[in-house]
Image (cartoon, rainbow, N blue to C red; front, top):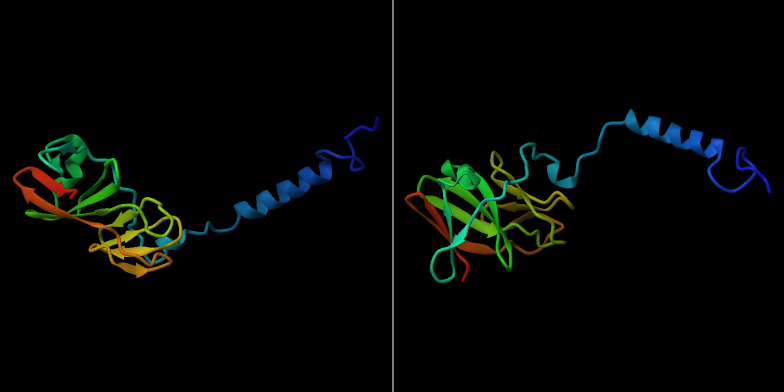
Length: 162
């Protein structure tokens, strides 16, 4: 039986290893490409998970005093909440208002990121961008995000699921 210690037989050869190392070394000297959603949107970031409870009927309540919901304490803060049927992005837009939209990209279902300075929702997978009203600004997504009715009362942000 022939040994695999040279370039004559099957298996991993010195040549294959050296070629692979050369590609790896070349690749590490190139600048990293950014995903399509980050092009021109420098503040897009993942949103932390918030904590919501059902508070009557078909309504979610987020207590801003809960540490998990602390980002909703100020304008521009945002959290994600999971429901049995959707993942919702809740954004505090002012001291007395908030918006709530599906955080699931309508293109292929990735969880969107929030860019507060640009007031955009961006998809890290294929570059779709949405306005804070959920309308598509840049594809490949072609459908708007689902909107939920949201209101603020004292230290509670309430989302109607119906």
